Length: 223
Image: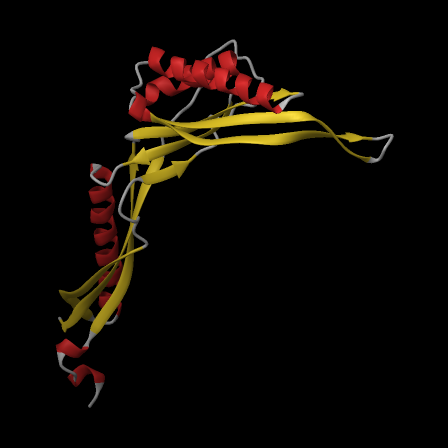
């Protein structure tokens, strides 16, 4: 049986569509690490704890509730330096460190917090990581655009074959974010330990994107 004589139900087109939507973040996570070097281990840990307390006091000044931050890690390591004369590593003391991850809903406060944390505690900064929640409307907008893109592609193929699109037979989301928050890592807010800023650190969250993908199978019908 020639192709033009086949039943329409046997003729399909499967395409993938891509949709992109720009979005402002719902929040931001930033990691702040304080450290102290000392000859004795207990001195390194004690001063590190004092810096961590000053960091928490800073959070309270900015009105961040305690559930908004969490201690990520506490460590104590030997502090060594290369001794050129002896051609070997020599122990100089210990380095204590304490990392805290803080979540902000008001993204505008991120710059001032980074500046104050670096100035008051010499904190090193990891982040920011922008949050986009599953219920953000940008997700649905990206999905609609992905579906429209899939249909445009399928219509082009169908017209080139002298056919028209019929019903959607199968629809599969591809490349979707797992359930939970979408996290976008950025290096815009990195601050080196020991940096004392005279101006507020500029941190911009514009231009984040949500990407949705869909695979759609359409029936093809005669014109």
